[in-house]
Image 1 (tube, rainbow, N blue to C red):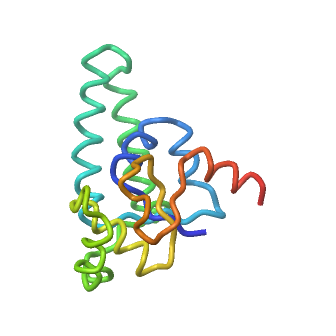
Image 2 (image 1 turned 180 degrees about the vertical axis):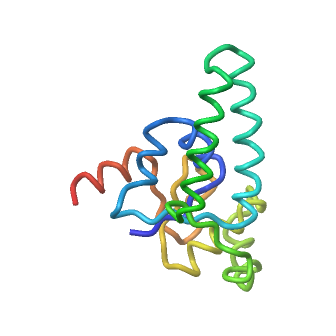
Length: 144
């Protein structure tokens, strides 16, 4: 099963153990649009710093999480897909997601790959692609 991850859910889940474990799931292929990965990587760094500053994680633990996330990408457990694969769908997709046009790469990639979108964002509803929350995707994989 292929799912295209929205940047915000990717950030939220990769910080959690359950999200990193999902990325290792052999029946699942998580992909992310190049632009969304750049946004997610920036936000991951910011959030990990914030969690350390608030004393919820040690700097060493945050560094280990960061390294594990990079390993997921390096080993294609999370595949970053270059823009040229989906950019031709930009105009079509922008019409489908008027509330947040910055999310067009996620929807375009999902259309290009005939895949669903892993998100917690209601802005994707009605875009023409199935959407999955973390919990429904986990339940579906457990059922299979």
